[in-house]
Length: 294
Image 1 (tube, rainbow, N blue to C red):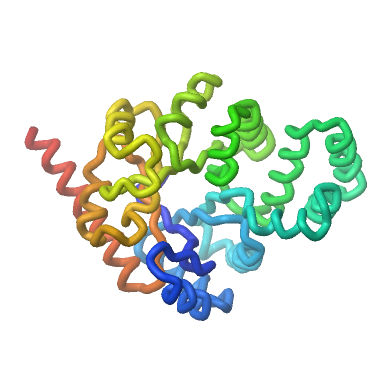
Image 2 (cartoon, rainbow, N blue to C red):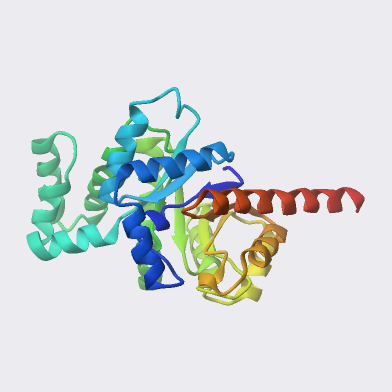
């Protein structure tokens, strides 16, 4: 995985600091061209991996990327599924069976039969596989080397002890899409223990890691201990602690942590993107120099 990964929160008005900024971002990115322009700025800054939800508008972005393969030949997308609001709204309006019919991809009749049988027999693993296929349909022809399960589902399954679904997700992503499974969580230590117990070694885990202990279930000390052990490939997200930490201080902290493979961030301006990239690279160079001296 690349050291720096670009996120999508700013495109869909997700801002942990203020509702006012969320509204401003919603206006700024109301057109797909604004999203593509920002992605191009990230690429020009040396970032070639975009981690995003399966929001309906991402399908439009994928269409634009597919139309210019030369420009985006090195570009990778890490899909994060499911986009919970989409399915919550659909289930409310259509019911579970209706939602399956709405989002089943590929051969409609064949998939519908599979979905219907799965639903009647309570084969929820098969239902999950159908929903993965539905979410992945928009990424056809695009390089998606890692596919993530969103924390809203990861942590729900974790809390309920439904570990077989975590394993089922990992197996299906590997077999069907030749991709590595990734898991987003607010409880890195517990998830890692569960995945290892289920035979998933050195997993890819994206978790909140920041100096403010923001959304770090188990506490910062336990996270730092877990990172030192080097048992998983970690992507640090929410590194600003929901806006509680100045950017420079936040990036210095996370850059110095051991075994953080990647840092995920989102930004809406050219200046913020370039400053963040340069700050991370500065601390990485400094860390490398200190190791050489030692």
